[in-house]
Image (cartoon, rainbow, N blue to C red; front, side, top):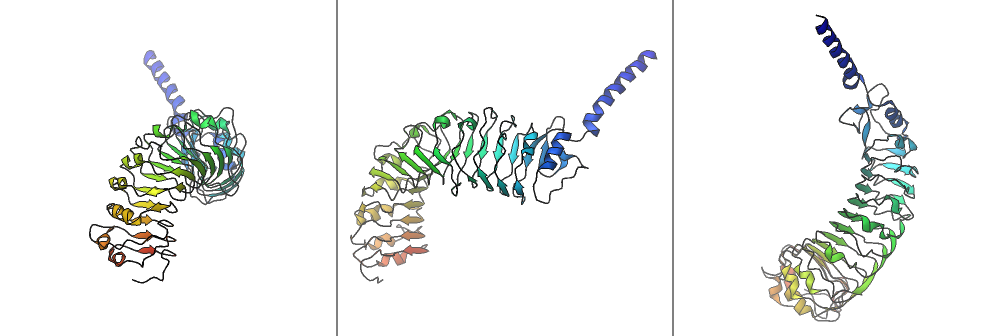
Amino acid sequence: MEDVSATQLLLLSALLFLLPCSAYDACDELDRDALLSLPFKAPLNWSASTDCCLWDGIICDPLYHIRVIWLRLPKRGLSGVVSSAVTNLTLLTHLNLSHNSLLGSLPDDLLSSLPSLQVIDLSFNRLIGRFPSSSNASNHLQIINLSSNFFNGAIPSSVLVPSISIYKVSNNSFSSFSGHIGDGIVKLTNLNIIELHSNQFSGKIPSHVGKPFNLLLHTNNFTGPLPSSLPNCTILSSLNLRVNNLMGELSAFKFSTLQRLATLDLGNNNFIGELPQSLYSCKSLTAIRYGSNQLTGEMSPGVVALESLSFLSISAYNLRNAAGAFRILKGCKNLTTLVLFMNFLNEPFPDDKSLGDPVGFQSLEVFSLGACQFTRQIPTWLAMLKKIKQILVVKAFNQSMRW
């Protein structure tokens, strides 16, 4: 009996040891106090009398259910500032305060105090100042999203750790991020999405930009040619470099390796030459914009090979041979939007009625011909387009318009 009693005592002791962890302990007291110290003005069900692991927007570690690892409060109507109290959540892996009305600058030690951070999403707020640097940013960091705030200055290279896969700092255009991207982006070998658009970045795009899925750098002040490594981005789906100061001969660029490319926007730059024939081997393309450059030439028959193409904008391209271009374009069966603004200057408008028959432009909904100065009247075949919703013809004809 003595042996049995001793065994029972040992089991009871073990049970009593485990009970505080499994039944009686609430979340870590320091984590709870840190959360209650956050000066957010919003109706949250946070109360010191309840377990903070049960609070709205909070997830604790799955093993012991004590330490806070997720602070996720998007679209909760939060206002106030991101105070230094958040840096006391030292095991935090996910910080998402996006789509609120948070103000002010971020704590200087935000990244250095959160060594386990994997995701930081502060997008769509009113945050200002410079993004804090860190000599020991988390090596686990995978997602940075600071889009649509009022951040300024350069992005610290110290936060660009190799583990990052999604990097979004777009649309800080009121007091914009600026400066060169720098070669720090080269070491981000796991990048899938790069969104730096609508800022004031300048200088050349780094020659090596990894192998992203989306590369959105439009509306900045980038200069120089297209990155030499771009043809190596074989999984690239969306490339938008519109509204920069990029330049160089475009006709020699090899697009043929970009077989997953779905959307391409090179508009409003300073490229010269003609559009490369290799582009027409990108059979996944659904949308192309390359107008407002210094490109010249005629419409290539190769565009018909892009069977999924629904949007084509080639405004201010100095296109010639309107009759040939329209005969080619009617072969693009899925084209819904066609923008030919400021092309074919003073050429006769094609009046071939076959352009409006069942095999020509029958998917077209939006047709822009502004500022072309055609020498003929609007042809009757335009009235035969069954799905057309909008025809933009401001200054498209240099005579009074008549059907």
